[in-house]
Image 1 (cartoon, rainbow, N blue to C red):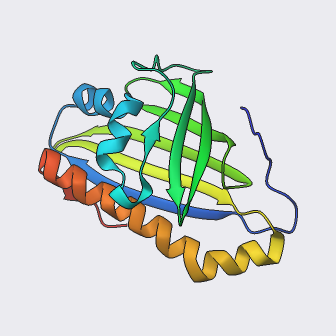
Image 2: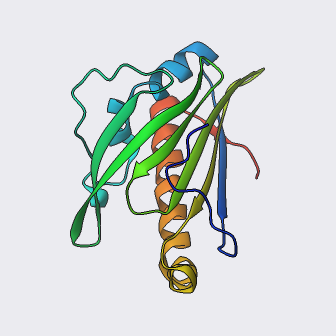
Length: 166
């Protein structure tokens, strides 16, 4: 497993988990999430998400994807590497360059009687030690909750889904 910035001892590693059921077959749902180009459709507009890597992006272990996002007034470059790739069950992206000291995002897909359970689990660490912890408490936790909440709502609209209680 690759870690560009390993979590440091004494710093807070935060977790975010979201689940929802998509009433479509596992292979179809994975195929949607397997295309980084679809991220623009499920990312809030205020982030001005733009993929820099030429399309189509060939996903697989070791694939690198570059983005531009806007956090506040500043454009921020984000580079991810796919460290685990097991279609149609999961993939993991880790930040190589971006606003976090550490970002590890596991995307899991599980066939159910209702379709496909989509689970996002993110472990992340902010820079600047105690100041990063304060920023998390004041802004980042709410911002990430809003970003992933937006994703859930958009996917609900696209696929007619149901959220799983978490």
